[in-house]
Image (cartoon, rainbow, N blue to C red):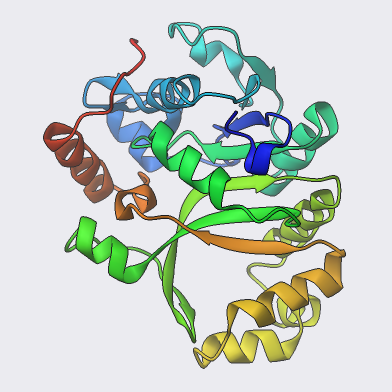
Length: 266
């Protein structure tokens, strides 16, 4: 079983919605309605994500959060549950937690390089008492495996990381973290309100690159009552999602050198 530390098999959520507004510029450039439908190596990226999840032993049923489910009709994704989207990714996770419960593994439709071994590695490394976990890769690991890539770095005092778009909401206490995430999303354009929410000390240390992971865990614990952890993966390619044209070119180059074991067909 791939469940973290031998617990129940997690249900899976793929975030595939589009934010309100003019739509994703990459989707428009590719001539598709949703970023999730952009071909990567000839296969819509969401089909690649579903294939990786189906090839991972021990996972539960798969749900897709998307506001217009009809766009998926042309794909052979097998049995999936379709869920509505919220105002943002965090709200969509909240809806899925209400419908599916915990444990819930969350990833994104643009995580096109996703591999079963990364999922297994992530779940195996989640600590037994952890309520919510997020996969990251260390900068040194990323630069070893994907030299020259431009990523968004999380500047901790004990090393720089980048996110890997894999999250485990392991216990019911994790719901409070999803709620906090939603509040942070709502305040992301107002730093003073975010400071009041997270605490000015946390933001100051982050800006000064003095933030430590234990300090972040303690603050999340005080705000939510949940134990949160960042889980470092061993393959730097796990951080590569598709947010801009350069990411698409990089993903296709990586797939050309080392294809995924199996992919779904469009």
